[in-house]
Length: 409
Image (cartoon, rainbow, N blue to C red; front, side, top):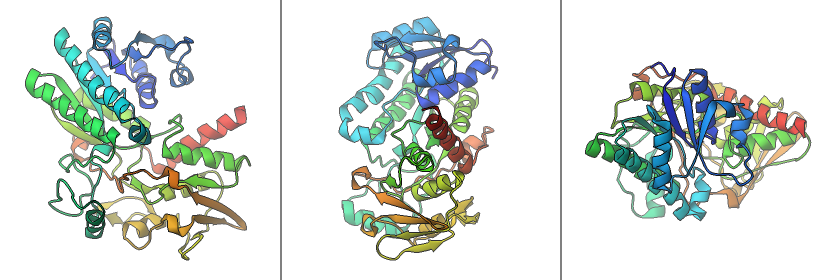
């Protein structure tokens, strides 16, 4: 598809992914319209200002909870393509603000689709679903039995284990109000396709990161602390569950996937977007330290005598039938040889004579944690998708962003 002179409406344009998408499409010659909430001081959102794209965007004031405003946005933009990225996307906030999350993510998506129907326009709509929709995914029989003991009931029950890498056909077991709201929007998009012929395409993007990622997200929590550690502002790293595994992509890979779906995706269909690798929160910390020039020789728990030498040594063997680069500690964790809990009292990182504490903060553990996310992207690959960036690339970009911020202040 040539984006030249195409009218594109982006909800959530001032967000992390939305601003990267706008920058990319502006460079491709598209006419960009962005839905934004009114700001009392009239200032530009940080993501828009940092990318220097304000003069290339037609901003439309409105919010998803107001269907009249959505209809007006369609009148103004007359879109060929809509990228629906706007959401309350911070999972922990969805536990403390579940109604707000439902109003923005669920009812807001319904308002957008209904406005499209009532206006009788015919854009292709790319819906930013989420890998969080899959929620509780079972990677081993042992994990299944543990979760069965905790919850008593598992629904839907697995038909086979392991359930990774995660295909689009995997059961949906959302574990947060955010994830539930995205399941609602996901099904609603396809309902409008079947009922009204709306050209809606669902992207279930796995975690995407990069420079400018919101401060509340775990990869930024990590890289911001490592930058402060390098600058001498802090002496330890504080984190929640280091056992969680995530499929982290660079945001640029993800927005290229959105654009590919706008061009070649089948309306009514669902596509995973991810990297087909999985990395633990612990490894993200260790790789961030090494990217900052702090080599990791050994890690050791404060209690329980769990010790791993050369924990970041690389291994490209297959896990769950998929070969990908991972650290030594991740290989051990994925094989069930080791894990880390609050009872371990934290972890000490040894770098030469230096010791860096990793402190476990119980307040940062989610009420219902998703243990592993690991995508199968075979379906979107058939459209021509491929990832260009490694985990090291993501870590470097995020770390440099925070190091530059510290230097400016």
